[in-house]
Image (cartoon, rainbow over all chains, first blue to last red; front, top):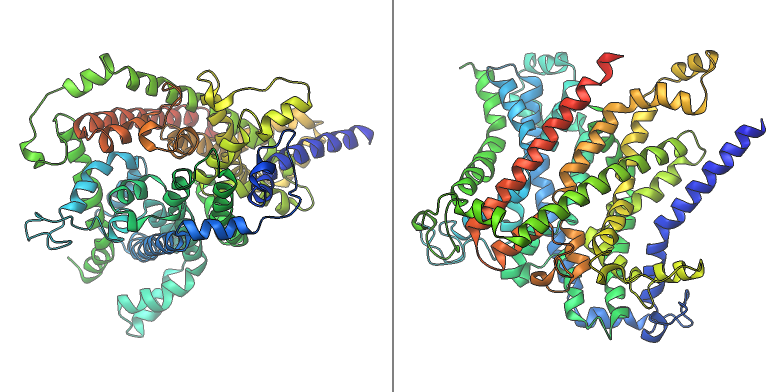
Length: 291
Length: 298
C-alpha cells in the first residue's frame, strides 16, 4: 500500500527532526565544553573543536568546588529519598491494609495536599528552620542562633514526606493479598514484623519507583536549596552551584569554562538517570492513567 | 480503640506529624503574614497589622506584580497546550514502532536533566552573534533575532525551551495511555472502515482523555510556578532576573525577590496566596470540565 508507506515516511521524518532537536543542545554542550574561547564565539560556528581542550575541565575543577556540590546534592537528595521511602511505605501500609474509622478522610486529605504548591510554605518554613530550639546556637526558646539554617537538615526536612509516594505505595499494597498477612498473624508475627519482613520485600518495585523518582526530582530542585544556600554557602548543592558558574566565571571571557562546568554537572547524572529509566517510568505512567 | 486501629495510626504518625508541622502550620502562618508588614528580623507576632493593604498594593500600585501576573498567564496558556498537543503527536508517532524504547529515551533525556542547566545551555544557543539558533536561521536565509535580549522575544524564547524540556514526560504518560487501549477496538474500527484521522478522533482521543487531562492539569500547575528557566536564562544575579525590563518576570520569581531580596515577607505572602488561589481554581475547573466530557459519556 503506497499510501501507508508515505504516511510512515512522513512520520519518520517528523520523528527524526524532533529527535535531532532533542539531542542537538546536548551535543553542542559537549562539543563546546572542549572548545577554545575563539572557537566558541566563531562565526560561522565551529561544530567540532580542532584540538579538544580537556584542560577546560581541569580549569573548572580548580576554580569551583564541584565535588562539594555533588556531595551536598547527594546528601540532600539521598536523605529526602530515604525519608520519603520509609514514611510512604508506613503510611501506605496503614491506608491499604487496615480498616479503621477516619481512614478515607486521611487518605483524601493526603491526596489534597498535592494541590498545595510548595511556594506557599517557604517563608514560614524558612523562619521555623532558624528558630528550631537548641540547634545552631539557639536557646530552648529558639532564639540567639541560626537554628538548622547551616545544616543539611534544613534542606531535607521540608521535603521528607511525599503525598505522591504515599499514594503510590498504597495503590501497590492494595494488590497484596490479605490472606498472606493473616497467615503471618496466625503464626504469631507482630504487625511491625509483618511490615518489615513481608510487605517491604513484596513492594520492592514500588519502592524503587518512589525512591528513584524522588531522588531525581530533588536532585534537580533549585528553589529551596537556593533559599538556604544564599545564607549558608557551604550547603551549595549542584543546581545552585551550576547557576553560580555564571558568576564564578566572566561570561564575556570564559563561557567555554562555564559550559565545561555544566557538562561536568549534568552529563554523568543524566546518563545515570537515563539508565535507571525502567525503574521509575512505570510509576510516572501509573499516576498518569489513574484518575 | 482496638489494637489493629492503634497500629494503623502508629504507622501513619510520621506522615501526620510532618503535615502538621510543614503544611498546616505554614499555610496558616502564610495567611496570617499576608496581612502583616514583616522583614523576618523581628518576632512575627509583633509585626504590625496592615489589613488588606498588601493585597491592595500588589493589585493596584505594583506594576511589576501585574506584569508578572500577565507574563505567567501567557506562559501557562501557551506552553501547556502546545506541549500537550506536541506530546500527543509524538506519542502516536512513536507508538507501535520498532525500537520505540530508543525514541522514548531520546525525548525523555531533557526531562531528567537539571532544568537550571538546560536553561543556561539554551541561553548560549540564543546568543545573538554566535548562538546556534541564529546560525541555523541564517543558514535558511532568515534574519538573526536578539532572542533573550529583546523584551518582545525574551518570554517566547523561554517558552520554547520549556516546551522542549517538558514534552518528553508528557509523551511518556500518553504513551502508557495508548498502550492501555485494547487492540480489538482498532480491529473493530478497521472492519467498520475507520482509518487514520477518524480512527484517532473516535477511538484514540476519547480513550486517551484521562491521560491527556492529567498531562494538562499537572502541566498548568507547574507552568504557573515557573522559576528555574527564568533564573537560569535571564541574569547571573538573582536580584536582576526577570529582565529585560521585566519582560520575563513571573509570579514565583517576583515572590522570591520580594521575600529574599527586599525582605518584604508580608507582601510576598500575599503574592503566594494570590498564586495559590489561581492554581487551585485552575485545577478544580479543569477537573470538572474534563469530567463532564469524560469517559462516562461514551
